[in-house]
Image (tube, rainbow over all chains, first blue to last red; front, side, top):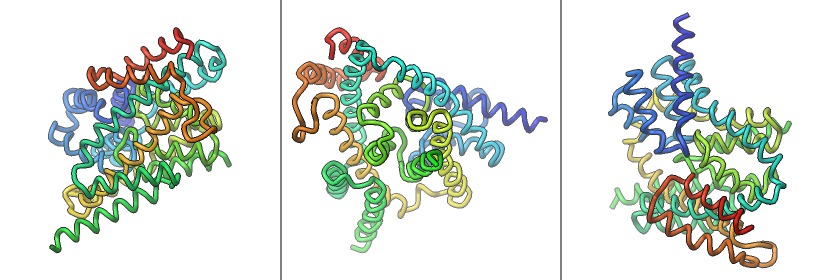
Length: 182
Length: 183
């Protein structure tokens, strides 16, 4: 019984985090800290920072990776699954409602115009994000070459992202080894 | 069958989209090309909806794309595919490699991987500009310029860089401008 209660508590905590975070990534840190560190005392701030750094380096969504780590630490695999359900559930419900509404109203002229405007804003917002990522991730000539190659492969040759990502990781490992040998 | 296909495609995204947030975008862009589950301008709408509603961007995208393709069941299987690799990989890495991100090989891999992800997302950004500002993309590389959209873009971009407000703020303004100016 306590087992079930603890799992429900994990679901509820991560449900709140999922429901109150807009945009994912860094924007979820304050909510995570309040719910898991200050309220539940599941971990301390240093550990949260460690988990966050690791989450960014592993495949998958940052929010989901954080949920897996904290949930697993509490209640092993069942806890990890509970935390993931909690963090994804708000998106699932909200987006289903929005998607159902959109497909019913998209043919209304005003709604279509609104989205034509919104698409312009999204293009500008993505450029802003890319600018920040570029400043953080492209700091030397090697990184710049990889950036250009990936950009051209995707833009002009429509290559799937998977071989680009694998190739870039291998290139990084090889370059790193060459750097050490010199 | 469509459920299985959705599960499989989003499973691949779950394994290869590293770095969170927009890193799912190049994959989704490919999906719209490959299967026609949604158009590129629907994908842009999806980004706007994701930025304006709570929850991680990737999960929002999986729900939206799944619903578009195969209803609620589609959403379920797309999300399942997306989160399953995280659960498995994170638990394994966490148990066996507690110093995973201090390993030199891992750091070197990310030295190459990070700029590649930025490059891929930049390519998507170029396409988003095409979709938002140019009409009739089929006629030539960029088609004809939608002047109203171009002006809105030219005003919006510096505002975003200067004021750094929440994305919802700019999305709301752009929606109002879109309605008023009949974009």
